[in-house]
Length: 295
Ligand SMILES: *[C@@H]1O[C@H](CO)[C@@H](O)[C@H](O)[C@H]1NC(C)=O
Ligand SMILES: *[C@@H]1O[C@H](CO)[C@@H](O)[C@H](O)[C@H]1NC(C)=O
Ligand SMILES: *[C@@H]1O[C@H](CO)[C@@H](O)[C@H](O)[C@H]1NC(C)=O
Image (cartoon, rainbow, N blue to C red; front, side, top):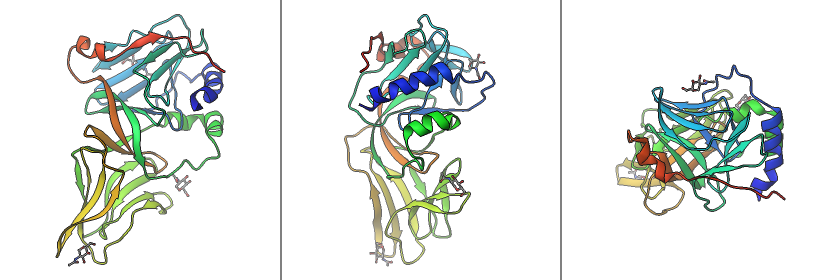
């Protein structure tokens, strides 16, 4: 499994590539693909919420500076790393143990997962039910991990749609509906969805077909996790393109990664649901000690 395969590399990173204390990266998300690591001393901050990982693997969620959730993961270590596994768990890896010793969340099927903030809540998302097929333009994950460490931390997410949301384009011109670093997602006046590299002007990915004449068009994420590009012309409503498939009803997010991938994730579990009492959220979280056998 990818997890076991990557572990030695991840441990090497945690032990050798300790981040400088002057880190000011804003990293409001953590993804499994490619693997990203939050190091102790670093924070994930989004709006009023800050998730902090400490050197003893303590994981604390703050809301405007006040502690709202202690995940109960502290151990004896002088450095710690955290990642989202491809089985949908948060793994905490202290340098004293050199294997993950604490997990948060239940194991679910092997897939792509993400730790995301959404409307002042913090949740584990996944499995990813669909993506547009755009891949990282690098050779391999190991290459990415070892040589491009800065990229790992650039895990910025743009949650451009939550199930139930509709974003509208225009018959009068292109409308940018999401932006992440170099790339943006656009609804064109010919009712096409494009992921564009804003630096080079190149199109990374696009939908078909294209309407012959400019038309009013909108993008909608359903409560079943389907992405629909729809429009209205002289003949009435039409569906121009659909992404994904009809899954079971739930909370879904659709987001744009910095390299042009659009992914739809299902909410797996809220780790913090915004309720003021930390005790209310805590039972949803299982932090437990494990001993992981690595082959
Ligand atoms: C992380 O957040 C904590 C709690 O708000 C804060 O004390 C600390 O300075 C932050 N660290 C960084 C590197 O921003
Ligand atoms: C409206 O759009 C649909 C789907 O693209 C197309 O089949 C139909 O001919 C269009 N009607 C008009 C009046 O443009
Ligand atoms: C966008 O284009 C620029 C210039 O060609 C390139 O350096 C960059 O890597 C591209 N970014 C993506 C995400 O494709």
